Image 1 (cartoon, rainbow, N blue to C red):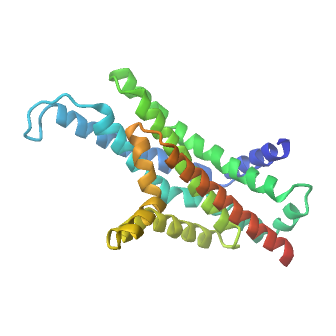
Image 2: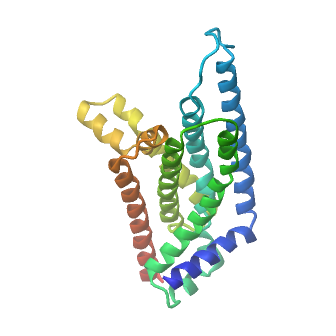
Image 3: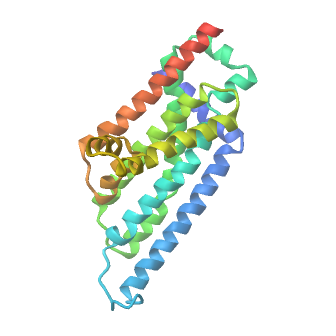
Length: 254
């Protein structure tokens, strides 16, 4: 476990040596802040009756928190491929992959170290949003349950995104290729249920289950279903398994 944490710390520091961490943190903070202000504006207008429906008592969780988490998931779809694109691709490009493979570390330790390093930076990104949520509790009375479950959903979804990014990054030396390919794969799983809408009942059910977005919706409502937790954890395991197979192939080629 010590080797894994040491490698995770090295990975996290490497993100801050390059501009990647700073770019991701700034862009994420700006985009989340913009959606936050837009959600507050809509909620205020609803409460003042500016949409022709008269003044209303607005549920903060329903009219602000849930849409905000949904918009955050969209932000992650675009930003997290940038987080993982360098993980293995940069090691291959710089020639340090051979040193990593010949080090006294197992493939599992290397993969988990890189995964936890990326997750640590991702958790730091989510931590930036706590200030906005804190303001809601300061000025309003939102329910903490849906907020906690929403963050759990974002954490699990982010883990799934990162595992896919690691698997794809381990197959190429080019960071741009890794980033674009990761985005394309994640986008496919994002919209796969749209394909199911035009197919038969059985196919529709299968494709809807494979959709990343379908499993996130309940978290934003405050519902923690073991079916959704199992889906994301399985997604993470499959992504890390494919990364391990890619590293094994790299050892054989080396």
